[in-house]
Length: 367
Ligand SMILES: *Cc1c(COP(=O)(O)O)cnc(C)c1O
Image (tube, rainbow, N blue to C red; front, top):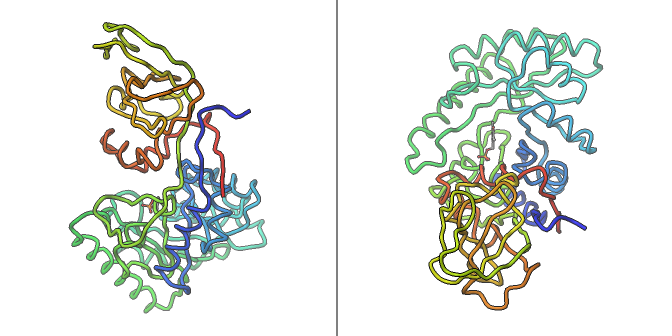
């Protein structure tokens, strides 16, 4: 029997969200499903299979290990490693038939060498920093770098890309400038006679708000999981949240007024109360920051979280809910409360909530 605490992953929602992204961008572009961090906590292999059946043409991961995991799960589609790696890691890219993000000559040389023994060329995507300030070449250094890469006989220059740091903001000025900067660069490279098939820039916010950012390929992450990148992007398309976090009541007790609850006694019952203990805690990714602030749905009623969230358990006030029984189903997030409500309470973003669900929480896939 599965653990009472589990995440339900609705693969139909993932399929619908990918189809939505596909319908926005049209049929001639590539669609890279971003499945880094175990598909934002949703389960990389299952999500990848679903995405590839629903309009995605390739996959994006952060680490070569994540690419290797997809290969061992039987995924054959192109997989791009979006992060930079140490030159010594180049053999991992070759062994798992991955594509690699590139912005240094050292890595280009290591990949070229690692590709010597391989029958296929190693596909690389050059990363340009047009304003993210994270990784990538300065645009002015890029044309010369492109020329150098074309001399490596074991490398195939498949892509060039950049990333949008502010596309989900209210003020769209910076993103428009960035799109213009990237367009100029790709025009300059094309004019020099080098053909790069996949020029790409758009994340979810780009897809939702900036049609000019689509180029040859788009890279949706958060929208595939049914969440909006921020409150400031267009909601003209409906997304379906894919993850629900559930558990069951492990223990119930009636306590007299004056009873303190959990570590530090930060909560004290002011009246006789009925209290449910749930078998989920911060080690499952249910944040301690929700202590005395969160709520969960029990018998379709909101139950306030009382006291501190422990590593493996937490307590909820069910005094006002009728007929509560041990084993009753509890929704910690999903339809209600939403992931966005938790993110607000924790002063973070929905991305962090879904990525934080712990390894010991089973993922149950439903279709
Ligand atoms: C994570 C990531 C994405 C996806 O971003 P979302 O905001 O989740 O759509 C796209 N591109 C790169 C380079 C990324 O690292």
